[in-house]
Image 1 (tube, rainbow, N blue to C red):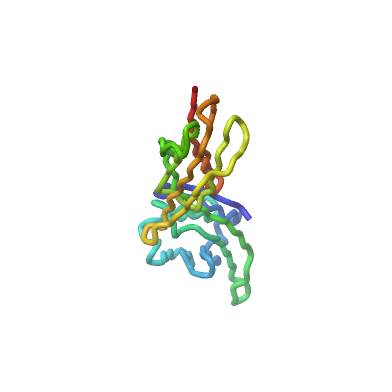
Image 2: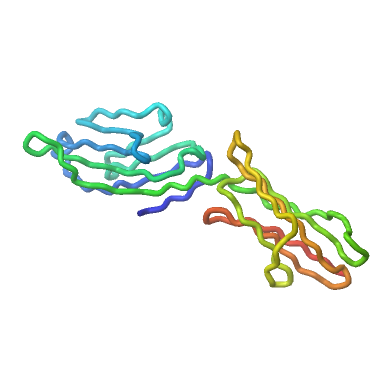
Length: 199
């Protein structure tokens, strides 16, 4: 299946890809569905849009029934299917089926790295933090080119907005130079922050 990845508030263009002739149009029924529920239907020139998509969709007949969803919400994520049926000798038969997976993400801001105390004389602790993104992130630390696990790595989700917050701590020895990267990956995107320690 095709995959489309977009951020919240952007627009997504979902291809149906059915090539039709103009004289065929009056005999076609087109449905865009999301996981079994109808988003939009187009039957003999009449278009109907379901309530949660009202004023947020464009349906392009000239571009093989492409569906455009505007002002994306996180809840728009999911699998969309375009079904094309044609009237043949009194009954509609399915002529075309196309599926598109839509992943709606909220971009995480560049993480912050701040000093978080000194567990012992030569050891400094730092914390990396970012908030307000979707989907669920994974956080990793790169210290002088090597991947290390952090301490107290926590991921939480706001039940209202569905957005995630992630933080993780790292200890390092202050008697050496360090080049540190905090790396947050989500969906097929990522953000990172560099931190340099010179003794």
